[in-house]
Length: 120
Image 1 (cartoon, one colour):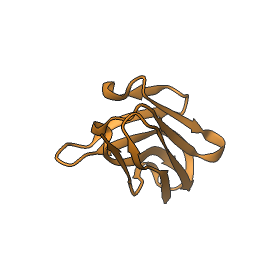
Image 2 (cartoon, rainbow, N blue to C red; image 1 turned 135 degrees about the horizontal axis):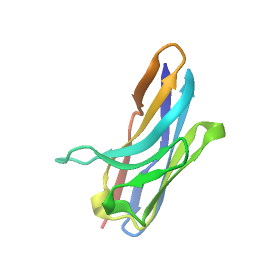
Image 3 (cartoon, rainbow, N blue to C red; image 1 turned 30 degrees about the horizontal axis):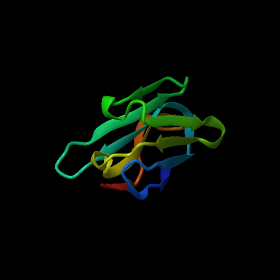
Image 4 (cartoon, one colour; image 1 turned 90 degrees about the horizontal axis):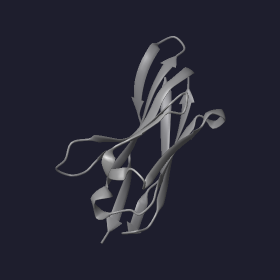
């Protein structure tokens, strides 16, 4: 079993910054990809950013040059630094991990979600 514990998020004015973190624990033998998704009311969940075990990153166009995903392999933690936030970034942000586990093979896990609200 794998647990993802998110922290960060909250309320910020437009133009401000927030940082999210997601710590993974459990029977993880190897990470494949970790990422952040978001789900806004009335919209589909979308991939915001992801990072592979080799450090390759991917961003949705709407956050490029504003958000940065990074990871600390020693701490099994992934971060999302969000700058120049806009009201349209308001959503629940979810951490996701695609991993190989001891005993269960490849599996996909989700965090509990953290609210990010950007006021105009």
